[in-house]
Every structure is written in structure tokens, then in C-alpha cells.
Length: 339
Length: 268
Ligand SMILES: Cc1cc2nc3c(=O)[nH]c(=O)nc-3n(C[C@H](O)[C@H](O)[C@H](O)COP(=O)(O)OP(=O)(O)OC[C@H]3O[C@@H](n4cnc5c(N)ncnc54)[C@H](O)[C@@H]3O)c2cc1C
Ligand SMILES: Nc1ncnc2c1ncn2[C@@H]1O[C@H](COP(=O)(O)O)[C@@H](O)[C@H]1O
Image (cartoon, rainbow over all chains, first blue to last red; front, side, top):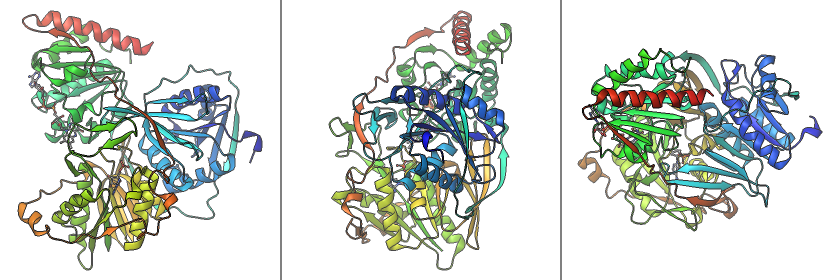
């Protein structure tokens, strides 16, 4: 253990298929602003083997220190071993703040870790700040279907832990000249084997980019009329460099997979652009998308509630607007985002 | 095989109110229901009990005010064998850690259990932290985002979980705690007859003292997190409207212009 690297702000790197995932860089942007306000070091913690170049990228995106936890399972998929390894590391280095992405891995590992460390954990934050008077972490999250923004702190226990919603911050500009330290630490597992055996990972190409991580979401509701029309949404999403989301009605109808469902019983999303077709805007749907940066809705009913949370409303028939829009964008030269 | 299901009673409607002073939900006068995602946990438990046969039993637990007895009763009507309400004034204001500790104590007292099922998250708190924390505290295998259970045999469970970009097939040692997603199954509907059949059932209440929980572990005192402030964001945006009317071409050109600009802005 390196005693001079104690305390500070930590972020949990997100690892997928043996590589550092870009949400790790978003986390570093959050962490950087917190660490600078506190005048402390920012670390990224990597829990599985990844290429050396990925570790250096963490430094380029803002980390002062990269901790690599060695031996916590093969690919870091055994969440029990990862959590146990992290608990040991956290007890040694005593970070003040520890944040992870609100992804399936981040949420799961942190939910185990905070219980082990008996500290506080705030889920799915969209805002983080430091209280000037006390230096405490202020964690802001939407609650009750986005009707409320609650700010939460962890006064007495350390680390102050939270998960933050993917896409809630842009990564900092990459700086290849930044200097940082890479520190390897063995996971102290005391000979414990994992209770979990990962038999297989099945890739689903339609979910390669989950809707929670999309910049642009093209969303269809019951007003799409039939399954076939969802192919048009796919085309539009492709043109806009985005992904397709759906309402529960559309999912129940079998027009879209459950993984695409946005709302109270689906996923919570914060895309930069949310564009919907034939979505009424039921409260349970809005609960999952109210933090979108910009909202555009197409609906033939000018009274549809979705318009009350939209920036731009198109009153018209999906059957006319959608094909015409696709044709217009294609005419302008295919991928307008250059992707 | 003993199965436990953890269910939470949540406000049924969209009109939830918050006490601006305390930052806690005003529960009076709200219609309550079982957290919709917990129905999938109930369905899985009851189905597997019947499939496993033998001495298999499903016990349901809910922590909440005395009125949460209704949630337990629905679970009994759903087919659970027994139910416990975990309720005490001391539990008021519990955060997810304090809740998980109380649930863990109840499971220990009434246990042991081989399988503990939770919903992925509750529609009011929306944290998804209670289930895995509970699983960890009871030293069980913790598996989240479960969308299929394929086998329970020889002290192990095999299942599938939904993750970004696909799914994982996982085998876990029992006891295990699972947090389940909606895809797992289709919960059965409750018939009036089943509801009436459990109307008179006695439901034991477990208090902090029954569970041997020290006061410092309960409610606000036992909660590491504190709500500092609560704001009601202005959800309503001022919406500029384009009526397609007779001029589809014009509307579509305008929309395409806006989208092109929007997307270009993200790139920059
Ligand atoms: C406990 C609970 C949880 C729920 N969870 C979710 C959730 O996670 N996500 C979710 O989305 N919903 C959820 N719901 C369901 C929600 O209440 C709504 O039923 C659902 O969001 C409506 O989906 P929709 O907008 O596709 O359909 P509808 O409400 O039927 O709306 C269709 C819209 O399309 C418009 N339309 C129809 N035809 C056309 C056309 N040709 N051109 C243009 N517009 C057209 C109509 O004017 C209408 O506004 C939940 C409900 C409950 C009770
Ligand atoms: N008070 C409670 N009583 C029983 N189970 C609960 C309680 N709170 C949460 N749970 C369980 O934990 C899951 C996740 O809840 P949450 O972490 O609040 O989103 C729920 O779906 C329930 O299965």
C-alpha cells in the first residue's frame, strides 16, 4: 500500500469485454470537478485486466492515479469477488468519495460494497457538488418518477458513495500529455472462491448500444400502428446516429424488445435528443425520460400530454411524417452525423 | 426448499406528494399497491415452489407501516404460504441500508431461506439497492437483473441476467438473492375468490425488538444518508408547435433542419 495516495476522490472504471468503457471517462469528468473543488487527487479503479493503453487513457481523461485491482476474478464479472477486493482497497486507502456509473455492473457492485462498508449510497444521480461549508458531497437525483429532485448527503460515514446516470456529463477533452501514476494492488480474497460461475455471455447486436447510453433516442409508441413501422424508426435512428426506444404499450405489443422500454418499469434515459412518434406521454413513460436534454414529439393529437414536456411538437400523422422525414434526411446525404 | 419474497408497498398513482420539510413522502390519503416489479418476484417464487414440490414453501415479507398488511394479504392471495409484516415506529425514515438490515434480520429470524427474491427496484425509491445489500448481508449469492430462471437443483441455481449489450448465463450457489426484471414472467391475476380466502388470515408483525435490532441501526439513526433538500423541478417545457396540416413538405423540411442542427451540435 502507498500511504501517500490515501484519501481523495475515486471513480470505478466500467469494464466491458476486457476493455475500459467510455462511461468511465464521463465519471472522470464528474470526479475531476469534485477533486479540484476539494483540492485532492482523483483516482480511477480498474477491477479486471485491461490493456495497458486503456489505463493510460484513464490518465489522459483526468485521473491522477489508476488503481488496478489484481486477481478479483477472471474478467471482473464475479461481482462478489470484485466487491470484496474493492472493500479491502477502500479500507486501506480511505477515499472520501467513490462514484460509479449507474450501469448494471456499477449498480450491482456498489450495492454490495456499501452494505459491506456500512456507508451511504445514492442511486442514479444527475448532479454532484461539494458543499463549501463542510466539504461534503451533495448528491442530487430525480425521485418519484422525476417529479422530485432530492439532494442527499452522507454526513458521518465514508466513503460517500453514489452512482451517476450515464450520459449525464461529457468526458473532458483528452490530454495525452497528462501525467498519472498506475498502482497495482492484489485483491485480498483470503482464498475465497466466487459463488458465481459465468457460464456464457450472449451478445445481442440489437442492444450493442443500450438505450441508456445513447445520445439520440428515436422512440415509438402505440401510435406507430404496427410492428413493421418500427423498422422505419430503426432507419431514422441510424440516420441520426441513435438508438430506438419504446413505450410499454409498444413493448407489450411485441413491436420492440423489453430492453428498449423507457419509463417506470423500463429504463431511465437522459439522451441529448429524445424524438418520439405516436407516444402519448403517460406519466409512467415521462418518469423515464424527463431529464432528456431536448425533446421533440410527433403526435396527431395536439392535446397529447407528451407535448407538455416537449420543446418542439409536431402535430401530424406518423404514417405521413415518418417516411417523409426519412426521405428528406436521406436526400440530404445519408448519415447526417457522419457516423 | 424455502423461498422468501420481499415486497414493498408503493403509492399507486401518479400524484405523489413530498413533505418539503422532512423530504419524505406524504403517505396519507394515497392509494397503495404492491410495487409492480415485485409481482414478478412473487410469480417466480410461487411457480418454482409448485414445480419443485416436496416441502417447498414461499414466505413473503414487507417492511412498512401497519397499513402495508394489505400488501402481504395480496401476496397470500397470490399464492404465498405465509407472510410477515416488519413494522415499528423506529423504522421510520430508513434509507436503503437500514431497510436491508431490518429485512436481513427478519430473514435470519424466520429462516433459513434458500432463495430470496426481490424486484429490480421500487417505483417510489427507484434505487434497486435494497435487494443486493440484503443479499450481501445474509451472505448469499447476489444476482441482479434476472430475466430467466432455468434450473434450481443441488444447491445451485442457473439463470440469465440482462446486461448492457446482451445477457449472461450465471450459475450461483444457494442461498441466493435475486433481483428480477419484468421480462421474467407474466404475473397471474388475482381473483376475488382468492382475495376473500385470505381476508381473515392472521399476519404476524415483527418489530425492531423482535428482530433484536439495536436502536442505532433503525430508521433515521441507522441511515448513513440524509436528505438535505427536495425540489420540484419544472417538468413542463414550453413547447413550440408545428401543425403539419396540409403542408407536410414544409413541416418535414423544418423538422429535418432542426434535427440536422441538433445532431451536428452533439458532434461538436
Ligand atoms: C405500474 C405501471 C408502470 C408502467 N410503466 C411504463 C413504462 O415503463 N414505460 C411506458 O412507456 N409506459 C409504462 N406504463 C404504461 C403507461 O401508463 C402508458 O400506458 C403507456 O406509456 C402508453 O404508451 P403509448 O404512448 O405508446 O400509447 P398510447 O397512450 O395509446 O398513446 C398513443 C399515442 O399515439 C398517438 N397516435 C395514434 N395514432 C397516431 C398516428 N397515426 N400518428 C400520430 N400519432 C398517433 C395518439 O394520439 C396517442 O397519443 C406503465 C403503467 C403502469 C400502470
Ligand atoms: N420496505 C421494503 N420491504 C420489503 N422489501 C423491500 C422494501 N424496500 C425494498 N424492498 C425490496 O427491494 C427491491 C428494490 O427496492 P429499492 O432498492 O427501494 O428500489 C424491491 O423491489 C423489493 O423487492
